[in-house]
Amino acid sequence: MDTGLPGDLNELVALLRSFPGVGARSARRMAFAILKWPENKRGRLGEIVSNLSENVSWCPECGNIAVAGAKCRFCLDASRDGTVICVVEEFQQIAGVEDSGLFRGLYHVLGGRLAPLEGRGPEDLNLDSLSARISRDGVSEVILALGEDVEGRATAAYVAEVLSGSGVSVTKLARGLPAGGDIAYADSATIAAALNGRVALGGKE
Image 1: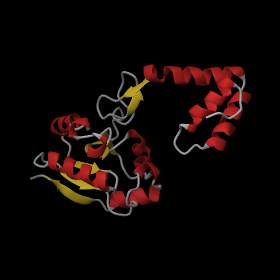
Image 2: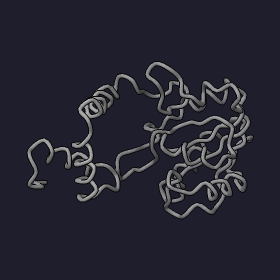
Image 3: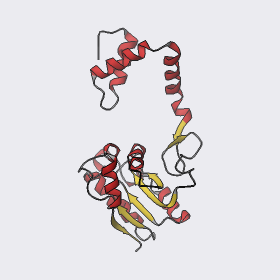
Image 4: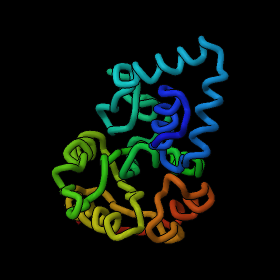
């Protein structure tokens, strides 16, 4: 995309446009704001972005983002209830559940959903470690906080089937989340209502 700006600034605008929900005008405004920053602030931004892959990684326990080489803050928090695990598709969705203020258990990130047309099958889901946690940590309930679209429902049904006979209660968020919606963008009141009204899917057979 040629904005008529000098080369590096034009490239910065193009990169900023690749962020979700950022259009051309917003990208230009952000690029101009960065241009006006003092040099040390621009340098710090570049340093952080450059070192992200070294300093930020995935929690070996649940799959959430964490400081490289360490567990995430939820898995390290001894005050959390380790008998209840909330399963989400992507780590970004954890913030939505936390904002409800109702959940004090732990999380597990699947790393995606079943999407056969996109080549994503059961082998692409982070399920082996979930089963290991259930058998090792005395988990009593697994809450499936997955999307309400076709793929989200299919993924929930598959996970519930995998966990059947594991001895845990498998529940899912109640209706109230918009069909096809992503819980990362749902408001805290909606998520709170969905958590309070969660319904059983299976388990304990």
